[in-house]
Length: 383
Image (cartoon, rainbow, N blue to C red; front, side, top):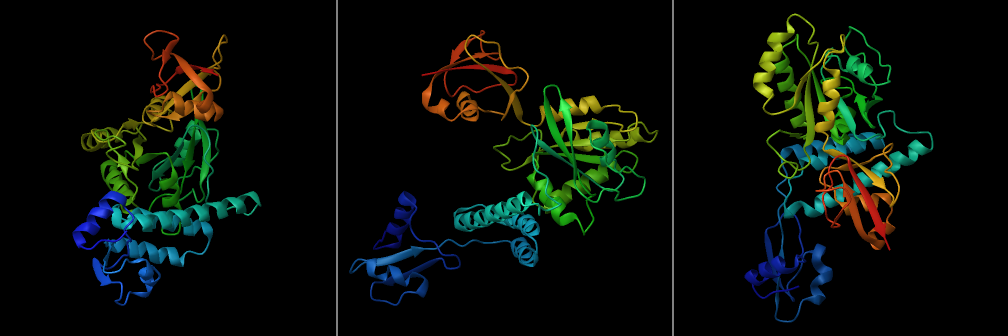
């Protein structure tokens, strides 16, 4: 679309959004007969006679962190390293109209890298630093050396990590399934934060996880450990969802729980007091002991309550609900979301649904956009 004045150009852009963008220049004005930069030369013949074409150009205003991440991306060798550094690169790009095209291009490149990594995995050449998601949610354990991450993984799951007194006993990602009632969470133990040789791929796994457990040692200044952990995650552009925030207010932020380990030690109470006074109003905080198993059941419950997922059970008309295998959906999902998960044809042929659980009475007929709650039972009626 073309305009005779800059004001008309801006109005066209507001209405249609199809005015051309090019990073680096604010506004460029030329007529049909004037010379046009090579990048736009093919559009010259389309400019009407006696009209002035204003190509509105939005500056990207990229921060210095972007160019540092771009350098790391160019230096990456393997597809996994490229994917990790590209995720860091995307996280540094500010979100505004001037970067829409850049972010879309980076996301396409990231999707191609992930497809390449998936193909290598199927052919037996998969990357050792990739953990395929399983269960209701993937939860990564983040902490410094000797904080007790491996001990907690061993206590909560069926995994058998190396548990030792020396630092950096974990050198590769190790996952295990933690049962909670009728679902399971995947916990992933990672090398300690602060190791330059592993921080690259560790940050990538943390960024891809659904939730984080921040493991701190109550006997070693836990408030300072928490501060340093959160600071490092911030440098990696991994946002943490605070109690006072919603997922809409902090888009992309992850649920996080501060796990105060070694609560059985005599010196733990003073550290726990300082930790609570500083962080309990911001994040869920659970004191545990991987040695005595104290607090671990409470940690399971706290993890579920903060994972932002719900369990929903399906029911065929005239039959009992299938209570053995619930469907796991994000918090805020609707009747239609569950229908699509069960079978795509339900979206086309759905007449109505009945709900037990959060409904006013058992078997209440509800609208298709009705929001589901944990442990709801849904019965679908199709054409």
